Image (tube, rainbow, N blue to C red; front, side, top):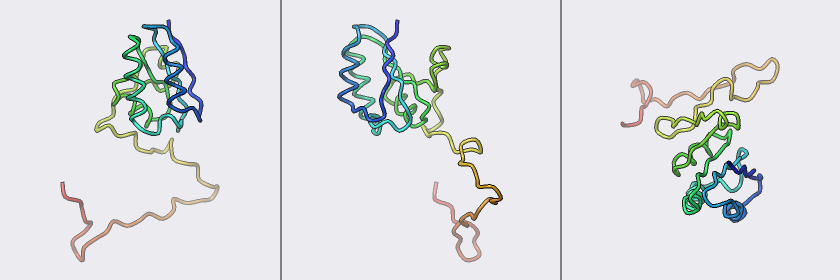
Length: 137
């Protein structure tokens, strides 16, 4: 059986540690994390919760639509899911190459105002007659 722990936007790490310790020994704890939750602003918090979960002998998983939280969970050794249905189906988030969150695509870009065009784009810096400047590899 799993214990669902809903993380509030303003919950701090001490609140979550207390809720995690209240779970039964060996019980799976599922942290439901909203985007940009205060307690998950640094990777250290997830590592601490992961260590606490390991000491309890249960599994700790993270469910969040926030790609940054998912990647932090994965780097802390926790299994991450993008939604509750994904958790229920057992479909974890796959690690992205290089640990980077997904690039913004058309579905994630903010909507444009009616009648707006693509907007201005910054030109790549160039050297006189040499084309775009590329960073060294």
